[in-house]
Length: 286
Image (cartoon, rainbow, N blue to C red):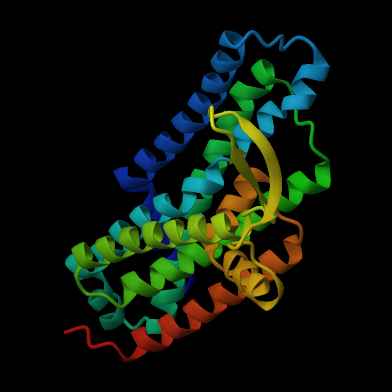
């Protein structure tokens, strides 16, 4: 598999796809920091006062935004980069010269993950380079920041395992691109819906209006959409299981159990990797 990885990384270096994706991430990181700085200045915030920066946690708000879109970028990159293996006949050639299907599958998985990780690092480095001088340094506790970075790496591994599963078992590049991109957007919408249910308040304010339209009484009432008991646990498990749900939590630094999130991502990555490798081993490549 060493030769396959070497060939994969060599091809990675020569393709414009990786450099374009990396450029987009670097540009987004810089623009996120600059945009936040311009917004705060236009709002009249004095960023020279440490208390103002600490209260707003400006750098954290932009630094972890990569978690919200890195899955979309990985879907686009992996489906295009690995999908070309079929259109160019590279997979059949690798098998003809003696490489096993499992070696080909795992080499492509590692290559796609490494490229996606490079793009994620490009965003973080760009945002930190531009944002630190303008927005100040991190104000959140270091363990929280480190857990978020580590967790998002494992989350990215789950994303890459899912997209490799689809691409390596789909002979048409155009089909794999559509499935991966459409799938990640569906999962993102699902995560937003689930989060909306979890964030529903326990009480809502009921109003009584007088004859002249004035509010005369405002009494909190139980929210019928508030989740409790087993139903809430199911929604929370689904939110933690979905890679897109984790991406929202890492973006907002709103997670409470990083070990649980990383364990679920690792389990999802292992499941899709095992299933994908098993299917690819039996796939007809003619």
